[in-house]
Length: 229
Image 1 (tube, rainbow, N blue to C red):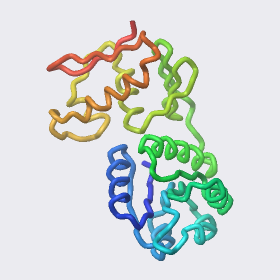
Image 2: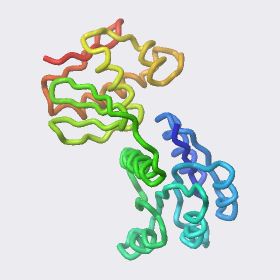
Image 3: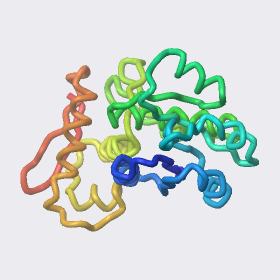
């Protein structure tokens, strides 16, 4: 499980990111004071750091070189309201691996986190196991690298979306209940009446809509079934 540290002095934003990232299956923690950042990194050793640019009058760019010199340096996604090209260039030159301007869409942030996970694995010599793939109509899923291609074009999925799609494809043409989905994908036995499954099913349908051969059926009172027509 990828460990992410959120460093932002805006506690409401930090808490929003923590909730969203935890819902996607990440291990997360936060820090709100720039002075505490490096000690926290040494203690938690995250793979990814989501770092706000400005902490009151302090610029986090001043500690980027220290962060990147740590033995287990994380990938750094810098968040900022400073959106001039010169600001982005300054942040990337100082050592940030990616740069996202506020306000931002959470879906885009998740996509960037997934990309940084891959970069971290590559930079740290983490060898992927032999690829295992699943294929359905024009859909191809690389299970080891967690990549999904539709008509040979990669589509961006969050961690939960990927796990849900993989589970549905593994059980293609079978009815899977909400309870089974919650247990397998979310690893929880929360109230099956929650609409979280419906929300993610809807998101998958939208991302797969270009292939009309792939259908995710809703079977009221029973669950869902993925079919290839």
